[in-house]
Length: 94
Image (cartoon, rainbow, N blue to C red; front, side, top):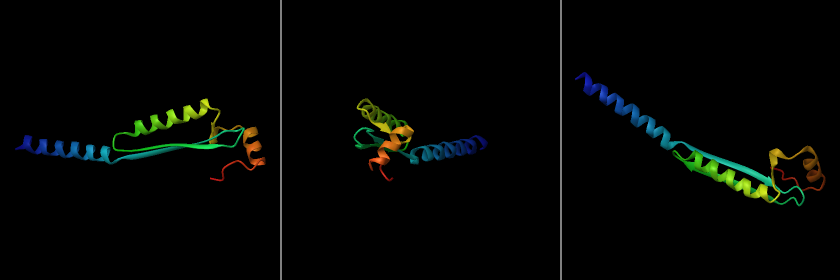
């Protein structure tokens, strides 16, 4: 009797853990800007369940492609780049 009860509780714990893992969701967005032209791009990914690493990997890959083209993530603009973009009215408001 005790073994049956223990197995039932173990199954409930495993089921609860899997339910929580599968119901988790994540999203990530990186806003990019080309300091010379003011052109903007956005890399975003989202996933449901056990795939947070996939959305992060996708977003990072997208950002690298834009970085190779001269874009910079908004949060990594240098003070000089930010000032130049603001002066020209090219810095996005959001």
